[in-house]
Image 1 (cartoon, rainbow, N blue to C red):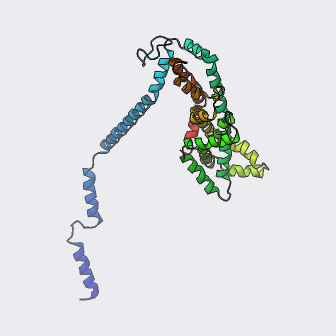
Image 2 (tube, rainbow, N blue to C red):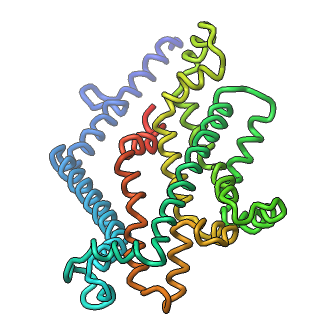
Image 3 (cartoon, rainbow, N blue to C red):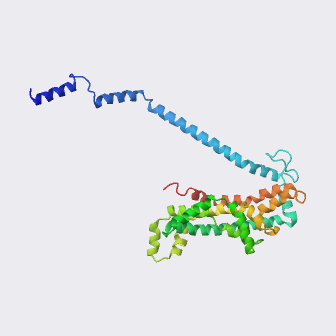
Length: 326
């Protein structure tokens, strides 16, 4: 028997008898068909997916609602207590209104100690406004330079900025006090303004936003038109970075407003103190200042923060979502 005949017989034996199902891909396809028949219908899978999505959303909504109640509860108590008649702030139910004398309470607040509360409010507005503006300007310049200019040591500088973000600012209070004491800046508003002009987080946010929102082609077009780097930054960069700059300004404003330790250490004069330090001093002197005035002053002191957030929330939300969609 020749080699050709032997090969033909081998192929016939491997193929099996006529009409039998082959063991190749068709058999596997048949097995796949059986597994598909065992799967749930498409409508059932969609229903399960819909139930899972509803459960996830309900869980997230419940957690967000609990978080909102946790953070808003002190504000609600403060609002209810400040509107009660003077002297009844700590009596009755603290969760619902029991009389209304908010304007009379504010009049008493302004008359205490010759109206020094309004001086504290003005000091806080000056410190926060000037400090936030300076901090935003320096953050914009530094972030823009780190994002759009290639210079030796850029990575090391940005690493130092990130390291400064991780260090709590309260650790700098004592060194700053010693430095300002040696420079003769105690009881000087510059002791509060100068540290407020530096914001490592602002530099980081400005750098990230500038890298993502300012195309290099736009800068090159400005250079080809003969514009200088400062003019390009002022005319193009600032406009494109505006949402991030508003966010930095708000963060700086709130941080300076809530700062207590540094102003308490470097400002001994009552007429130079911000409202946070002044209210703590009132709270410590229960005999000279009635405790209800501290509650009323606390409510009034958060009004500028609410106004700032409500007025700039459109830019703030845009800045917080920077880089979310490319």
